[in-house]
Length: 321
Image (cartoon, rainbow, N blue to C red; front, side, top):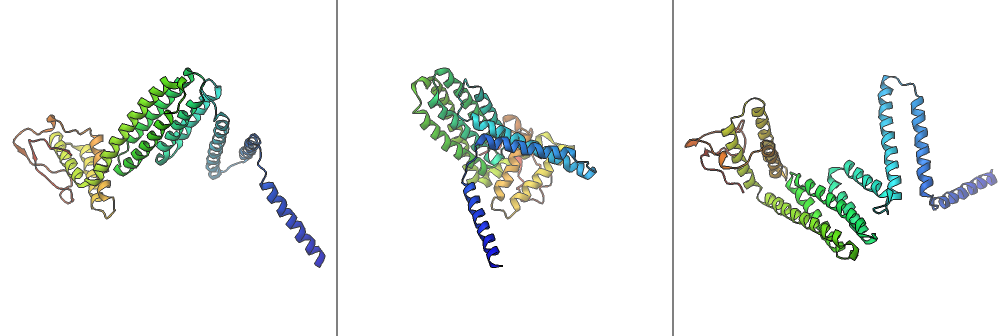
């Protein structure tokens, strides 16, 4: 019994050593991509051969969608790898830009801006490799489009803390971009001027959002009070009924619940709700927002039991912070 067990042990040991050696071998990227596509095609063929019941029919559709997304991801990712170093004029360059846009589109909101900035920086890096001004101008157009998207993205963030974080990130990246542009070749100077102007505008906007967001965080109670007074003026002037009345009532109740909660961000959460309400109803503080008459008393729906202050609406406009 002894020798066979020893032989088996030696065989297992040799096998383990061979596996370790195989792990160190790096397969060719094209072969990996081709093999994965073949395997997935086989899996989808097996899926088609199934005879599903109603329950398995639903599962089958879900699996087919999953397979399709995986195949599409691999297809895009595989070609994107080949197109990575392509420049304007190369047929793969258009595909590279499309692949980048697709990745940004499906990315979670929390990383979308940073991913777009990374691709923008990559375009600026490509300026070092261009051979003529026309190629540089094509890259410049892409950078400007990316930065416009980034600006739009951070402007729509309603949570001051998230807006502050995003704007700081944008400002850090724009400063890096300006450093990269300073080393661009002379043949790219017209494109560099175009990009520099766009970067500076994005940087200035990020700074403005950063300051405003920090101000809202530091003085949140004052913003809450000002916005509540503004909403009261709107309600007294418009006298909403029906669905609008119900919607305002529900939103103010949500704001009150947020402000009254024990969450560390209770004030910010309430402010986000009021900001959205004001934006949706396009409430602005203008001379036309004053109420005719000497003094008008009004209370917003369902505010009698809330912690949001009830104030008198007078003919004088409310000054917002």
